[in-house]
Amino acid sequence: MLKLKVTTMDKISESITNALLQRGFTAPLTFTQSVNGNKQPCIEVESTPFQTVPVIFKSIKIDTFGTSIQPLTDENKAVVPDTLFVWVSVHVSYVHFGNGSNGCSLFDYTCKVDTSREYTDGVYDERIN
Image 1 (cartoon, rainbow, N blue to C red):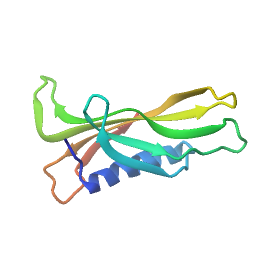
Image 2: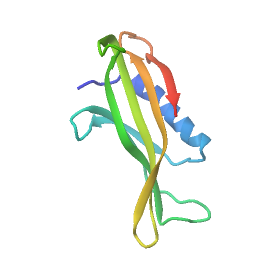
Image 3: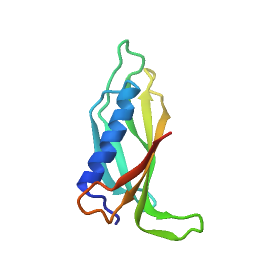
């Protein structure tokens, strides 16, 4: 499994947390490297359920709705050496008072990671869309 360094995960979590703060979300988050349903490495982002004032939903939670860590490929589909592409779709889920649930995408975070950088996080070309 492709595994990111702790310093790389720290940089990614800081960027996603700051993007959520800019959108008014202050809930504590956990960031975990795992494997998705397609057996691909990914980053899971999750908050504990929280509320807003005034209360508009029974509960609200930040999570991911798609994520991957994979080798970066160029325009000819050739693998770029020592470089990973990270994509995390940050999502908000909510439960209505009638117990129905829904959610929506907040933003997509992407970056490239230079894995040959031993003493830095290696993160570059960060984007939040």
